[in-house]
Structures are given as C-alpha cells and as structure tokens.
Image 1 (cartoon, one colour):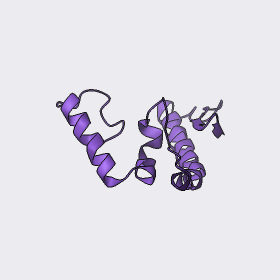
Image 2: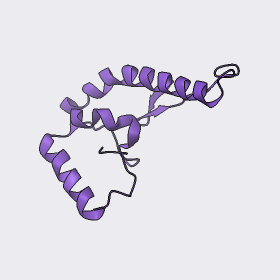
Image 3: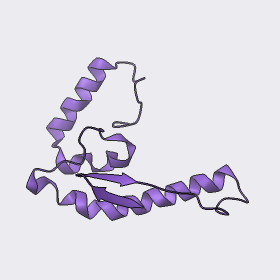
Image 4: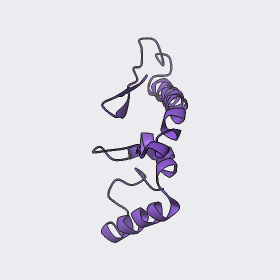
Length: 103
C-alpha cells in the first residue's frame, strides 16, 4: 500500500497470515517484492509530475531504496554526478549505506 501525505510517500506492506506459510521466509520475500513493484507502479505517475512544480521526491528522509529509481526524474545528470562525487569523497570505501542511492 502506498500513501501520499505531508508531501511524502510512505509504503507499507503486510504479509498476511497464510502468505508464504508453506515456503516460510522465501514466500514473505516474494510478497514484499510484489508489494514494492505495485508501489513503484502506483507512484511513478505522481513522481513524474513533480519537477514542473519544483517538487522533489524526497525531503528530510533522503532517497533510500524505494525512491532510488526516481532520482533522475527530479535531478539532472550533473546534480547526480555531483552527489556521486560527494559520496565518493566522504565514503571512499563505499561502506556507508551501500546501495541506498547509488549502485
């Protein structure tokens, strides 16, 4: 489930009783991937409309894994390159939150 409010997007998923019960953790992981895919599909049109209004996909909570695919919708290639350069300068070994914004 995705919800919009307070200028942000929150995704909540719940593994219901019986989902993944036969396959345990594997079933739960599959369910989480499905809910993430549905959430991404649901918010993509919304995120695409933000830049013309000066909107961003993130505020105080950062980009993270959920909004990572949408970074290029509201940041230019030059801005993303600058972000990568700052990340490399502050974290040359790539140990702080690996994969959260950049692969």
